Image 1 (cartoon, chains in turn purple, red):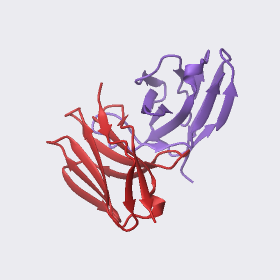
Image 2 (spheres, rainbow over the protein chains, first blue to last red):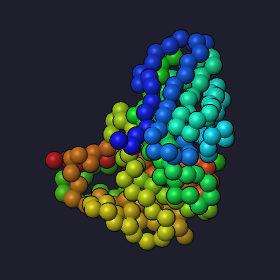
Image 3 (cartoon, rainbow over the protein chains, first blue to last red):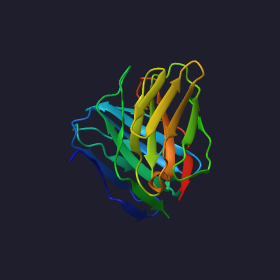
Length: 116
Length: 110
């Protein structure tokens, strides 16, 4: 089954404790992206990756890191989480990004993160 | 900052009626337009994509695009209670980002 998976689905942590949220897709998609969703603010892009070893900032990258060492995986790293990073996080992938790309994005199930 | 605007609703329609959802966008260079459906606590699910002016129909769903007016809409015919969800409009300028509106909450009343 074609899908985007994320782990963990739920996480409660404390300020300053490094964490990683994993994302994996089995569709051989080139483009992957991370979003956070907050009430009244909608989905905002954190980072995206056009392909292996190619990543770039989205709208709200502060406090986050990513890596893309393999095509299928795109982990989101919070080196020192803070309470304002409490949110619902979605990973997404699409066949391609880029100019003119019909970049329909497919979303993972989401990770609900609470930072105390 | 590229903006995508939607009426947050809630929009309530009776079962069997047509639900009309609207979206405007600010970037005239936008090339790709999408409607996602999101049930509470779930991930967005792509239901329609449209790339050229005019209408595109898929079952009970019709997407309408007017690039001159920077306007995209979604019509849901014969609305069902299962259509009750938040509908997200998303717009891409063909670059690397997809910009989302904050969504319109639709309630279909049985």
